[in-house]
Length: 273
Image (tube, rainbow, N blue to C red; front, side, top):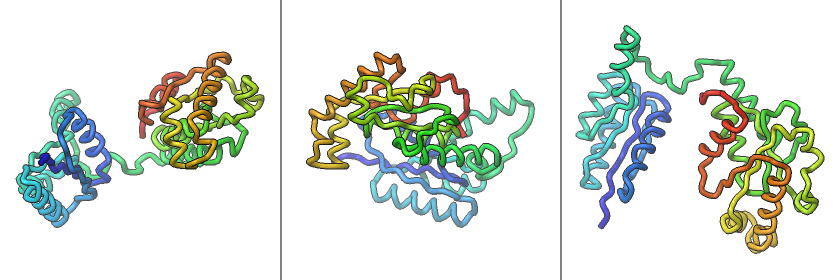
């Protein structure tokens, strides 16, 4: 019987910071099985006690000491969580003392600040970029004058999720253009894209993986056959090479990695919100 270690990401805010750091840490331990859960907005003693009870119960159920990765900044709430008997890991602890010493000032513990809407201009930029990505998805709107970049590729190569990620996290106006059979058969860059060549970035994918993705969307269709997938990918990659469009194979690449490489390619220095 495999051992499952319960892990909790606990925060007085959204819990995004604790969960992001926590998942990054857990991926370093291959072969281990974890049951993870995020508990957000633990910002009162009653909520902390309820969370501690959930943590304690999970430990008893699995017969394993729970692990709590916490971004809760109130020491009193952290103490209540620690009463669960879990291994407590404060994601801020390794950094606070060195920063206090370097900056010559003490931290001001404020709950829920990491992902709060403190910069209205930045928040509005994200919303505008998201609306832009949605309205310029899959060639719906072909006016690319205001686009920061345009992702090009065959259907289901990862264009839409990457555009939305760039919008939500960086406020980047990213459009995407799906290469149709007519586009691919011409072996030339579509006319509507030629004026925006400097904004183009190609996404490609291994045909077998593409076939798996398309089969889930349209099973038993020509669109999802391995022959069609191989043909489209080969023609798209030929176009990228002939037109000197920078490209990336997305088969084994996460959305986060794709976004980082695209931003690097265009020298876009926007910070993650």
